[in-house]
Image 1 (tube, one colour):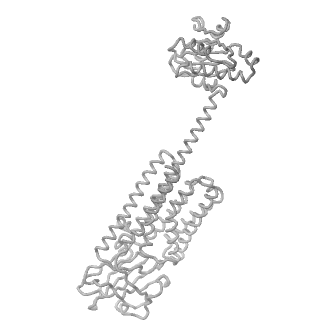
Image 2: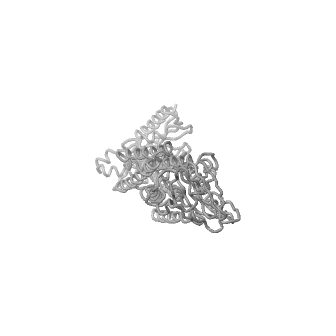
Length: 557
């Protein structure tokens, strides 16, 4: 698949996943109810505060009231509440204790007290508090929350709704499917990348797996599902939330640092990356340990650390663009959705965007997009690494071939020939060939024509030698052939091939050959074999040249 088709595929996947928040909005069920807020005062009770009271403020945003204790009144509940099964749902927030009181048309009230641990046990998927409105046969007119110990970072009673049991179940099923799908996706990607890491050993794969584990943990805590498995207080779940999201940010920086080429994070950029990770970790740990003390300040510090992370990410991408990184475009596609959602979340921290169910659960969509797109990014990165490896191996093979090859004739040089020749237990035949009167050829025709004679002589040797033979130029005009000892006449066949080769200017070129066979298991074996074949070659020259001589039994003894 070419880069252009690959890019089109990534864009299609990104666009398909980017609409997943719209799907999540189907889980935002029930009829919204309007609420008014009044700070609690000593001695005020629920029955008194259920009456329309002049102290209630129905227009000011809840966050403007600051931290403390509050009464939150829903003066009008939807039709059906009290006479048919209904559930009152609101987003999970930091509170020490809350008391919900329902007022009925006959003047009766029903109250339910919920402390920190009970709040965790009433959580539904999406981190939604859910309380059944008791059916008494008369309409439920109003609902009153007395909230104690509210940090009021995101609100006091956020986005309250009245839903039917079927709507609540459908919301849980939908969100359960989405969270389970994300959990399965994370598990599959972790197993896949750990398996690849065993083979490839790239550090960004470990960072990615750790980031996926942190993201899955954050999804479990932010969904509220973790309280179904572990008996913890709701505020402890929120502390865990902050820690896991900060950890995810730190691991995202580590992943980027090892995903890009080393030059991108060299120098000051690498030092800033460490500082950003330290800031994220400090902000997460500070909130987890110190809240609710100065919760607003700690939350602002936490949101600010992610603002710094986004600025740093932009700076890294700009630097990668300047350095012409090969991985910038794929990294940009993978992280576009998480950065966009993180920007909206940071805007909500500083009060620029109102908290909603969709916004509160947008992290799942962004993490899903990031997980899938980062997996594709890793696949593309590995593809590039494979190309780099193949190119390096080809270059190494070419360099090795150049180092082992005689540049003039293309045959093996002496060093490579000896490396391949020595070793083994089979009997092999060595043929040494020397061009007769080669100095005279050089003096007559010149060195350029002499080199052409050497090249044509080498081609004749290569053509006449059997397939498994080693053919080498081991000296100026001296050549060697080493082959399995199954053809005693090989030396004569080589000589005939030389005689039949056309030389420059139709020059007659002859050669003398010496041949011997032995086992070449060690260097000493090679030395003896070479000495016998060389002696046979000398005999061929002394006998008049242009002939073959085989080592005599006396020589072989």
